[in-house]
Length: 261
Image (cartoon, rainbow, N blue to C red; front, side, top):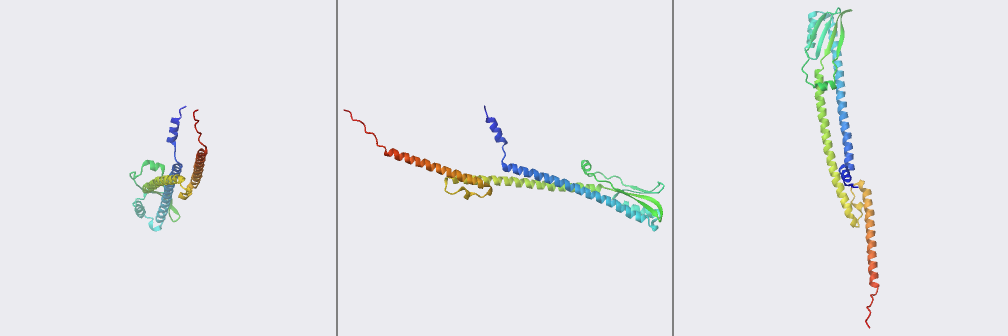
């Protein structure tokens, strides 16, 4: 049965223990980087969502309070107040509806051009919060105010921050890959030098443990020391046997040839 192809396949599929260790650690680092990136981006999205809701609530409350002041009951004054807030460019619409459903003031902003990829907006959507407040004149309700915040600026900020965080994570991954490759080459070179010195120490009287610079090679050095001792004992025994055999042969008298009659 021919086992040569099987042995060749085994040699091709072999991987050193250090390589497997670094590969496992690299995969763990990759998982940590991806996980931290996802958590960071999601945390930023949640923060922006909260800020958008807070902004709409505060804007609606402050504008409703201003419109409910006795000095601001004039329609022109109310319109100027709502226009001043709408012209800041932070709101999709501002509406003031009377109790009977009549639109007293309506301003709507056209949706800005998309600056964020659609897949990113679908993956990490931001809400479009809106808030409603009642407008009153004393105890009499005069209208219902509706304010909706534009989330395009927040979505654009989230997109750019995600790019920066992804580049940072990619840079950290590249640095780790370079470090792991350098560490692997250094350890392989050091291991080769250590093993070579310890093997050369077999023919010397110096124990192999004296050449050890890595604590991980203590067991290897002890094995080499045991091998060296066995080799020396074998050589010593073989030399003793040769010397004994030679001495015995020298002590045996040579037979004298018989003389013819």
